[in-house]
Length: 221
Image (cartoon, rainbow, N blue to C red; front, side, top):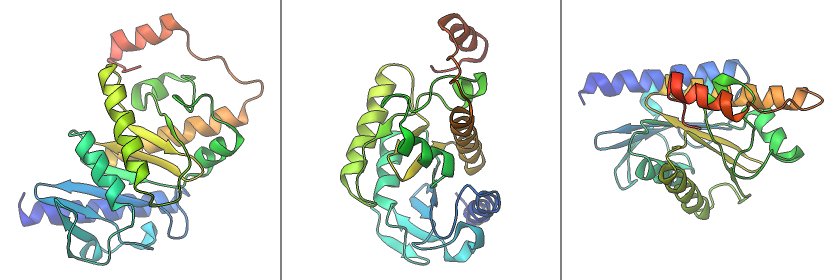
């Protein structure tokens, strides 16, 4: 990666952070974003508002997590690194405290292995399965083990994960770029909002409808 490539990634992290903050997906200093580099990672600083990130102040760490430059790295760095290690295709990880997703865990998720049912085709295609990770305090290293285990289990079933939900805290979403990770997060939060606002609860897509999405679009459900 050239210096210009890293500079562009820094700008993109700040753009995505500002977009998420402006639209209410994050608030105050909650949430964090990281990207993978050939020799390490960039991650937003601890206690930084995603709405006012500065490219030069993003924390840069090496492959072992040792900080090289920038402001002090987010305390969630260890979890982000576990996700990258468990999912080689992940190039960006986003964590937020999105309102409807956190509310869903307080009200009660659909089931632990799937916090939401497959109620829309785009949720199936763009997000897929999202398991609930039981509550641990923020920064607890045990969460990394649980997330890595969930990633490995779903990959073995042929339905790889793009997100997990931390009980009472918020989602961790990963994808091939910051823009793609943000889009996945948006679809996940929107589906939680739809689920919470509809009474009676809508029926999930049936087996034939899910199979049609697999056949036509390669959906991993």
